Image (cartoon, rainbow, N blue to C red):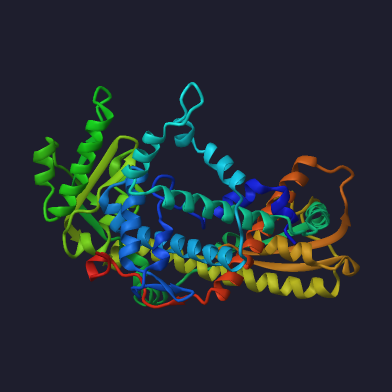
Length: 487
C-alpha cells in the first residue's frame, strides 16, 4: 500500500502535523505521564481518560509556547484542537505499545544528538555538560527518566510511521491514467439563451411587483449594522520587543477582565478610544483593507452575541505584526425592511429578470428537444473550440463535467446546462482527441496531488483502524470554560 508515503515522506510529515504534537514541554506540548491518570472526563482511549484539566493545562502551555495570550488558550476552538491532538497521541501510543515496538540504545543516542538544545550542551573539548542538562530538564519540570522515556516514545512513533511508509501502493499507473483523462480534449460549440435577451419581452404589472415585494420582504432589508468604539495598541519600532510583549499581555488581559469598558485598558496604556459608525458585516465603510476594524475576526466578533447582546469587549485580536485591537458595540441597529417606494426600482428589476429567465429557459428547452432529434444541426451555434479538464476555457463545474462525460460513440451529442440567474447554454460535442504533446510539469503536479491524496486517505484509514482497536469512547463533550469546564 504505502509507496506514496515511502517516496514522499515530506507529504506524510505535513499530514502528521495535523495529528502529532511532540511529547514533552521542552520540545512540545504534552506529557505521556497522563496515561496513568484515572479521572474520567472527556474521552477514554483503551480505558484511560483524557481530562478537561489536562486539555486546559496543555492548551495554556501551547499558547505560551507560540507566543499567544491566556485568552487564546481559553477559547473552545483552541482547546478542541488540543483535545484532538491529545487523542491522536494516545491512539498512536496505544498502537506503539500494542505492536511492541522497541528502540535501541544507539538509535536513542543518535536522536538525542540531533536535538539543538542537547547539541548546545557539548563543550568545545567534546565533553557533555551534565549539570546544565539536568538544570534544563528541571526548568521544564522533567527528570532524566521522564526525558529519556519521552524521546524513546517519539522514536517508537517514528518507527511505526516508517513501517507504514514501507507498504506499497501502485500510484504511478493511477497518476498516468488520471493525467491522460485530464488531457483528453473535446470539440464543442455553444448556444446561449440569456435572460437579458428576453428583458424587452416582459412588462410586470403593479400588482405583480407589490405581490413579489410582500412575499420576498427579506430581499429588501437594509443590513444590520453597529456603531462601535475601539482601541489599538501598536508597537513602537524603538521599543524593546519584551516590553511590547508585556504591554500586549496587559492589553489582552485588561480588555478581557474588565469587559464592560475599554477605558481601563486605554488609561493604563495611554491609548485613545476611537469610534466608528455604520459598521456592517462587510466591515467599516470607507476604510483601507489594513484598518484594524477591517480584520475578519474583529468583524465576526463584533457581530457575535457576546458583543451585541451583552455589550462586552471583544477578545483582543492581533490584526498584523505589532498591532492589537479590541472593540465593543455601542449601538446595534437591526436589519429593517425598506419601504416599497425606496426599493420599487429594484423590485421591478428582480421581477423582470426572473420573468425573462423563465422565457429563456422555455426557449432553450424547445430548441434542445429539437436538437436531440437532429444533433447534426449546428445552426445558431458559435464557432467550435477544444476543451479539456486541463484547459476548460470558460466551462466550469457541471458544464465541464457533462461535456467530458458523454460517450464518444454518441457523437455528435448535445447537453443543456442551466445557469441560475443567467439563463441556459446548450453545448454540442462532436469530436474527441489526445493532444500531440504533453506538459511534463502538469503531469508532475497532478501526480503529486494524487500522491498527497493517497497519503492522506491511507493514513486516515490507518488511524481509523487504531482508533477502533484502542476502543475510543467519547464520555463528555468539551465545554466552554464559562460553562464550568476546565480548571
